Amino acid sequence: MLRCVSVDREPFESAVNRVLDDLRPGDLTTYGEIAEEAGYPGAARAVGSLLASSGGRFPWWRVVTASGRLVPGYEDEQTGLLEGEGHTFVNGRLQRTSSTGDDD
DNA sequence: CCCCTGACTGTCG
DNA sequence: CCGACAGCCAGGG
Image (tube, rainbow, N blue to C red; front, side, top):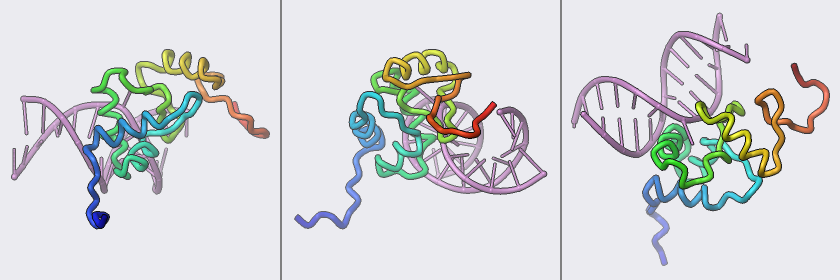
């Protein structure tokens, strides 16, 4: 097989779809991670657009921004779903087991 | 082909 | 923490 030279990357939608399908319950990732895993580093924006267009045929709730921000307009829904996956949210923020400092 | 918009990201103030 | 800018990619008019 020598067909590695080319990038042979599948359509953006297929690539992203595969990454989303590869996610497991309780997993959390960001648009940038998905884009990178899909083979499209920097296409985080396109990933968001795709999810928005898809309409819920993917675990969009397992996808958050690099800032830890939840999906605008669905924060409540996403938070609830993530809680169902085993995550914990406090003050609209993902509760982490860090120490110190924290916050506000 | 050009222009605009968008569930993004990182830097600067 | 928040707002403003610039960079990146895909889709629609």
